[in-house]
Image 1: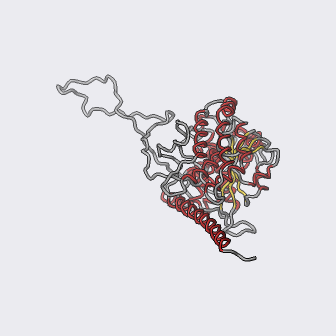
Image 2: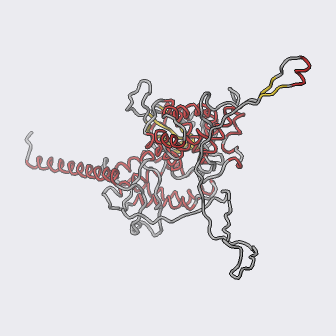
Image 3: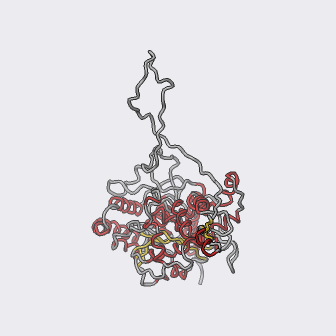
Length: 508
């Protein structure tokens, strides 16, 4: 069969169209990656004209504190918004009064002055740095002289000191609580704490601090396990996972990835639990392991590993993940925002959700059926007619959304579940901030200790407790418990059962 000039021209035109699509896709990818590496990180939109595709009314414009695996988001404006100056004082802080007296108690004519009152000049906060001191613990000895006179034998008695936190160590509940607070609440790794402890008066090595963290984590494990039991008994949960490097794992290279998983209560639950788990894999088998016994509704992203949970768990999708991908398409060219119909619809959804956040679950479900469902139907109608290049940013966003359609639509059925999975991603963000400082765990025991202490810290915060004080109380109480403590004996040590007088509250 002879190839004509017309056939050759047609082949060339087809080839040219394919190459142009590839160039467009690659150009988008380069611009997207450049913005991810060098751009500021936020999804706040500052263009006042970007609402023109839909009817008037503002949309959801606050940044989502999410990002890929809870790590990064993007901004399209270089102008930073003004931050309000805020100075407030917790009314529960102790108050001390300082009264300034005159140098002389005589008036200008030499008469004696009489005190008649005081007026407030200003209110300020003073800080007293922590101090270390050596506590030498003795056991008082006693004897009974009366018994000795009766039988001529010595009758000796002595006080009984409480169990040490770590045998043959200088570590105490207050000292270790500060180490843990610095690492897990403030994100300060152990190697950066050493010099400060040395300046304060104690010489410790990084291996010593690591030993304290791991050994006390084992002491706290029964509380950690009990928190998980409470969590999986709840009806609604949220989940996420992120990579974490563990250097010395059996059968794995140091460069291989392990994972930290988080599962948490929804924001409307009275008894909040934020549970972290270390796994050497991201497979569905580990998801089955940490969700064993759970038979409710789980909100998570589109990761296929959650498919292994089976029919006993009802999965709900996260609209923030969908919105993020369409936002990436709208900002694929550096420093240029191009408003799109799907992004406008998604923004309106989040704006409505913001208005309903204080409603009861049933009220929110009714509002979703009446007002949110039409927007979701419009969104899917647009998706069904769109035909982008598959590998473009819009194509990636569209594919993700369509693959999650059934899970995303389930948000209409449950008023308890939020529109997004941002709550668990914020908890994962807390771990990611720490990970950027710790970098890795040396051993699986260290990774498990990270999971245990992050669980206790974030759960304490979620229940309005000061995490440092809560940790100190746990480390003071737990060593005094029997070796094989029953779960019911630990109930009193859970965050929601702690007396409020023993813990100062904070904003979670």
